[in-house]
Image (cartoon, rainbow, N blue to C red; front, side, top):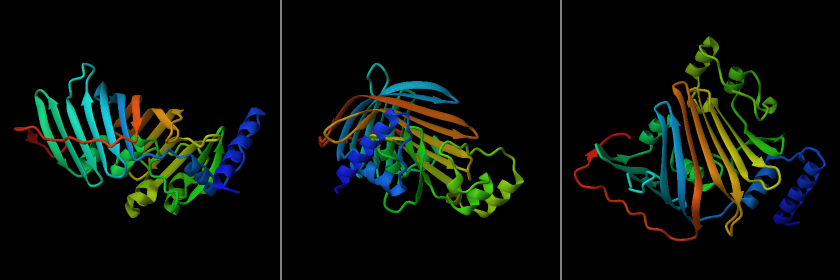
Length: 294
């Protein structure tokens, strides 16, 4: 029996079960991943126009952006306010970040690695993360080498990454007992937590979870709880629409929560095009100040 037929039968079976008020079929982590990979959107080039809002402790900002992406190669963005005059441009490659601001009174450029971007977001980010966030695919999901536990969560499947025993000592339960929606916030200060943190590496205290639609296997949500640095990142996708390249979300939300405050980014796609090879024009204007961060 081919994989495509298996996926179709799984979807059909779950649709009938939900219609009768029954829960989703229990699937293993490998079965969930197989269904997702079969349905995953496939693209090499994407061009998008998006409407963005950013809420941070400093206030709320809204702008429009043109995004161009060549898979695993480059991400280019041109940012404009409502009037359409470009105020910033970004060019990302797998190992470099280039940015310049054209805002009067704040004209500068940055050329370097992803550290400055991670500091701005207060969460570590690299090229693969940004590509996943913008490209409609799960962030940090390792379908070949990752170890996950599958759970049903209403009309969704959840994959919980298996974690190290240091996490159990902090939250009090092992990964087999962790429910998909369990809160993992720690009330500080905790002498037990501080002692463990001093002996652990940052990756030892990281928990990742991914949610998929129980019928279409659309990647609905990713969540990362970093117990080492007391922060979390949640990525939500919605309004999936079919295309020749697969189902692609039109609405996105990224919430980064830290002890210093929250950062919420929301955007919707007003126009999208797949398969066209784009240029990525990027020339730093003359007489711009070079900075070491954004």
